[in-house]
Image (tube, rainbow, N blue to C red; front, side):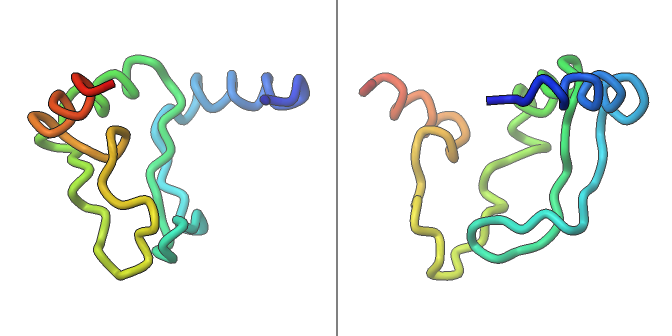
Length: 85
C-alpha cells in the first residue's frame, strides 16, 4: 500500500522525472540498477513495446527463483500462459 505521505512525491516524479535510472536499485537476483517509470504514457510505451523492452534481459544466474512466468514473458509465450489462466 502506498503511504499518503508519498503521494506528493509520486506526483512530483510524474511531472519532473517520469523516467529515471536508479543505480542503487537491487533486483532479487543481485544485479544493481533499474529504470523507474512514473508516468502513464511512458509506462504504456514500455509495457507495449516488448521488442525494445523485452523481459528476456533477466539473466539466468541460477538465482532466478521465479523462473519464467506470466509476468516475465513476452509474446507469444505470454499469450500462451495467459490463455491457461
